Image: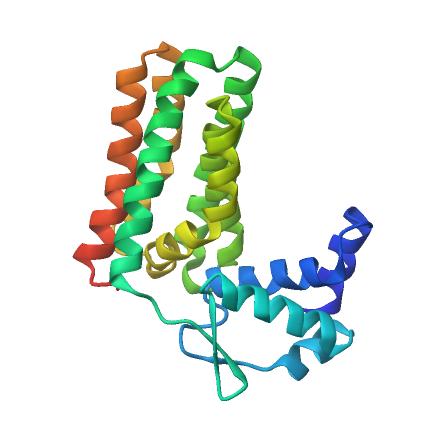
Length: 233
């Protein structure tokens, strides 16, 4: 992270508190594995990199600690390790949300929203192609952001504001788990996912709730079984 990233966000969101922006930047570093589980996070180093005081950094780190992304030990901050139990719980919970949302979206989505979702799906195809060819040199957060945007759009398309709010609150917990699989790039995995999002759009277009729920269940299952198969937790 650097001061240019900070200023870009501030220019786009001038009324957002500085600690919230710092929180977002650190959180993305964690979910994209720029900060690895167990590694120490230096409050003073981050403040220096961003060109700000330590106060908003400390506030952001404490908030991340409250949400289990960071742990505090001997007054020092570390990226929290993964818990297999917590991973299973999050996958179960968010799986229910996304399957339900896909089913509701199939019934409620407008042609305009479906077209927007197709655009995001095709964008994901291109991003996966980039990631496949660039390998470890690829900017991983770009893929993570595109994936989150697509899935969150389906949740919002359900029309259920409470579920949308809950998902928005938990999305980084969920996507931190899925990040393991996206980052590790097992052989053949991208060949599946780069077309899967367009397939989900095709199913939504039919307007069949059961088919949409099944398509999302299958899609999420690819990630979950992949994480377990490749022993990424």
